[in-house]
Amino acid sequence: MYTQLYGFAMSIAIRFSRDQEDAADILSHAFIKVFKSIHSFDRGKGNFHGWIKQIVIREALDHLKKRNRYSAKELAEADERGIDAEVISKMDADALMQVIRQLPPATHTVFILYVTEGYSHQQIAESLNISTGTSKWHLSEARRLLQQKLKNYTPN
Amino acid sequence: MNRLLPYEQVVSEKIEHVSIPDMAESVWAAIETGLDGDLPENDPGGNDPASPSQSGTPAAPKFYYFAAGIVITAAVLITLFNPWGKKSPENSSPIHAPYKQDTAGRPLPVFDNEPLQKDNNISNQQAPGASGIDSNDYFSFPVTVNDSSGFNIPATTKDSSRNYIDSMQKVIPANSDLQPKQISPASKPKGLKGFSDSDYLIKQEKKN
Image (cartoon, chains in turn green, cyan):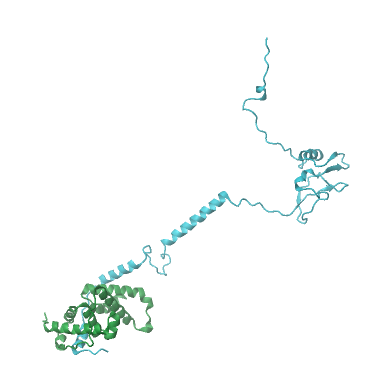
């Protein structure tokens, strides 16, 4: 089961982590929780992969909470700063991920939750124990910083 | 669904293809370490109910050995000291001693070798003429023999046990098993070993 789920689970963990070791740490803790609570999995509440995904994301957020503090700054609305999509489309996925990892941890996490996992600001606020305004502020900060980094980005 | 900016949609698609590090082995080793660390220290077999022979093996024998030791010790002590004492079989039924009566209705001694018989049909039957005799006066009830056997034992009242035994020896044939045995205290050797009574006699020496 672990072998079959490793790729799927690692692809989630790697998005939230700063590096590969960080991802491996998140993944090992997530799988320990999976093995311990596998008897509590209820097929009626969702598929198995969805259940695994929730555990990995929750572990990644716990990992982040232990080491980082979230900004107390809040925003009423997230800034919608535009970035040329064409530039990003030309980028390698790993290179793009490296740019995102350069964001502050909390900002990085909010951006991934909002953009790739489809969390709303309300869900992000509940998951990270922050306000929705703070979640919006982190998203705006992520857009601003990414615009700066991608403007100066030169592919290797 | 969140309203994503155009570049964010591209980012979302791109991130799906991030290469996955080949760390399956090291992650699995960390998982094993984590799971082993969560097991009880003295339970290497885990709590798998499918393997009851391994479940809790280190702790259980300690308890059973301790309990077995206590039980064995208690049994040995009871066997040696027996604080309740040896219970003799209880016999509540009276012993019916066959007796003969003289003309006055008083009991006579038994002459033959009839053994004492236990008669369960008789309960607390008292011999005629024995009324008023206390159990402590068993040997002192009046004995009067006046029959054709030719023996004439003087009647006694409140005879002592010694007199009764003497009278019985006269009445009961000598070869009878019922012949009362002489009660004699165990004789304790007098004086010192190797000295007789004559050694203590003072003899007057004759003077020449």
